[in-house]
Length: 171
Image 1: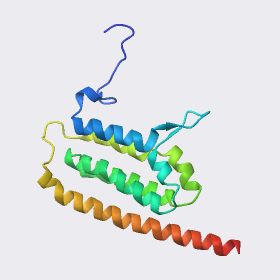
Image 2: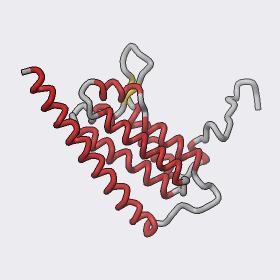
Image 3: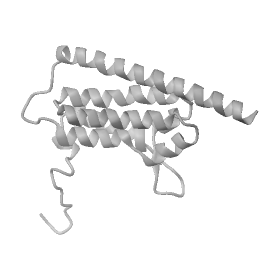
């Protein structure tokens, strides 16, 4: 190791070259969702999730479905249940705050749940065990997508009720 070589601590950073190809794809997907585009004049970045989130309620529901892919990746790579619960909580917080007009858009700039979730996945996966098979993942996919649909429905209802309240209070 020379002076110019970066120091990499495996628990903190795992290079793409040491990850399975599906985790490399998930890491790139998380980056696309949360940080693909720089905000001019700042050091902040946003992604597709923030752009889709501009559509009240429905956009955050779509963002939740996209985030579910990373949670499914965590289940596939045998991340412990407590860590998966933390990942789900990150998505729930993002959807609930994201469904509030303007506040949710600002939160998308500050809160990067997909990058946080991919970090949890990479750090917490069971490296000694093979990933779950497609058959094993079928039930998990149904459960995660069902829970995401329920969460999305709640976000849409919340956004509609908030919008109706705002319209009534302005009239």
